[in-house]
Length: 192
Image 1 (spheres, helix red, strand yellow):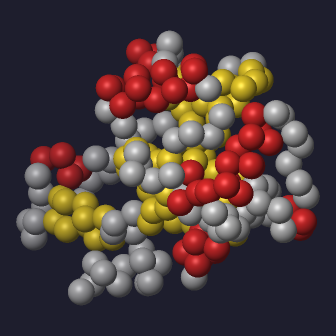
Image 2 (cartoon, helix red, strand yellow):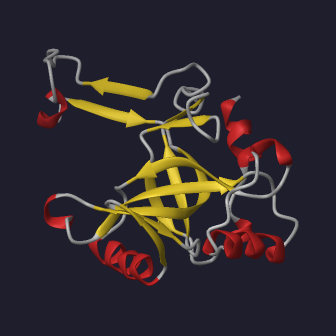
């Protein structure tokens, strides 16, 4: 019961330790006397809109992604597709206060997928690149991912007005169509 209410109390989870274990700085739980039991991440389904090559052994593969959610729920698949086509034509995004449907970036993530999944997404990125901005590629929206994160806050610095803490990809969502990705209302509801 304590773990289920941890987020409501503003904690990330529990740290359990053996009664005789001593506190030590750094990763003392490696010897098996400490155990971190974190709360489950918050999550939303989001659309991949930008990609950048990774670092180290992943330097030749696009592995660093920017994700977006809809500004509001799309009326239907056709309305969402019209937004995708406008992006592909490089039309400027409508004003945020216009009520027009658009994809709003809210998170960057680069972990959570297997090497095979990264390679598959890399192929999609290369086949659907719209523009290049230095190392960043603007990608035609085609993929939906489940994005997990530890916390969420309002942020006037971000276009979406939202900042998430420790975002990561939980999984690809091939079962979801673009118009089924989440919207800003879902993120705002997570603010509490």
